[in-house]
Image (cartoon, rainbow, N blue to C red; front, side):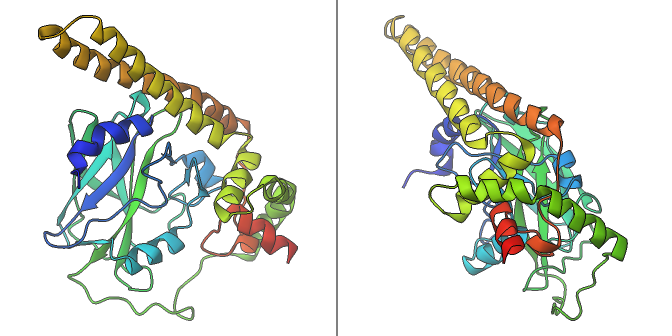
Length: 333
């Protein structure tokens, strides 16, 4: 099986924006995988604070191919699959990111939600991050807080880590779960998990949900496959007035065209030293192509974000925040 290093050029081509590939904590523990990202497709994770604050998406944002990220569901899936890395207070985590194009460039900022899924638009703790750029990839060396106290998920010792850049068309990045091993896990039950919703806040969210209901219903109606993945994408697209799938296709097409054109130009230069030049040219043009594709994709997302971010989660979509498709079904049922 090819190594991750050997696959990086292919993954970078598939993603015109930066995406997290893996995160390795304590030596000997499994590596964490990113939430919801389809690594073998032209996917990306947008973590836009405006969309989060408006309650369109959860604190981990959305992916181009699946919509809003259900943090709770993704965390429990990763736990079941044993793809959650271990951490300790002040411990280190090595994060690998496929840069893709210009939209995947750093600097990256990382933070941690010690409750796993409750901070929302604010409350995360910043994580010390050291960044090293490689060929088509970025390595992040994270140092967990010295007073880290993960208390989330069914395991009672899970944190959610977010890493994201400052790309105007995004920001792009991703989320992953970590499991703290040097504390006593919390005993989480529906009865002892505190909530902070006020009556005024609930009424405000209900009003927003009622306003957003038509967009959510339209998303479900437009989902020809009837899958939750497609419903999630279309619900967010209707709320933000964007086209995530088209953006992903434009990005990967531009990246592929750029790489192919560069390779053809390079071949014309001949063998020997010329062949080396062709290889370098292909790599550079491939990156440029990815950047152009990401730009085109970002234009649509940028317009959508500027349009108006609306809330799709709320009471009808469950306290933890479900996908837009689920939200519509909850309203109707």
